[in-house]
Image 1: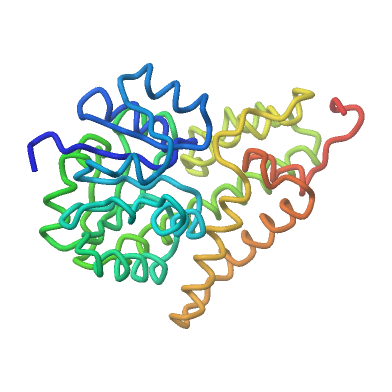
Image 2 (image 1 turned 180 degrees about the horizontal axis):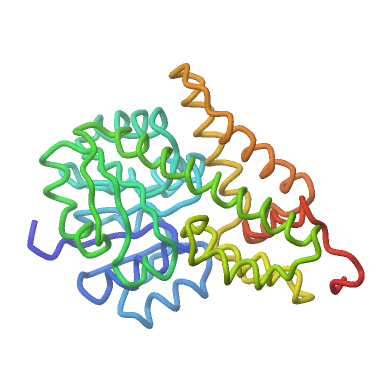
Length: 302
């Protein structure tokens, strides 16, 4: 493999597109997505569009998967016109999606049957940081797989932590990351709902508390978007769908149950996201979960 690995990106969603466009400035990148608009954006950034995952992976040294869940991983790799149809033995698949340890291990086992290496490398940081190569990436992979994927990972990560030598190790640490992120968003929603119930201006509350001991990245990031849900008729731009946290908190509580570790805060947050999903907010930004605790009223713009 050359120092510039030919890279395929499967999935150009909120994280996949900025990762692919950033990579395309440095590496030969071919991508697949169901959205022609997103493919066109990648081509503008210097990448190449493919009509199927199989076509994207045909000449690839590294395939980066940036899809939503394990069902999409299975379809992209092993479905009709999937990556496995054309990927050469010795190539590496980088799994950036959050799917849980067991799913990562099962995927790696199937790819190993074809002589394909797996790098379990879930990412965190959001779309802006993805486009700047400023992500946190946690990795579970053996030395050979990591060496092959390292040029791609180094372009995407400002912080890269190798957790262990096996697929699934990265997913375990990412689950802990999502536990904290999910609880922090839920706590921010609860705080702003209470502030609103007490007659305080949510924008003032966010601006004040984000600078103090009660602040967190999620409070500073999601808090203004929660305020926006009340100040505008339209929902805020979707940067992270609520149903992503339905999935991720399900992974967290599932692996905690299997490990016999109580996670009462994560479980409570999971229920809040499930309530949001039941209220029809699944495809909205996860900050919209605040309306489950403090609904909009006609006076607030509905």
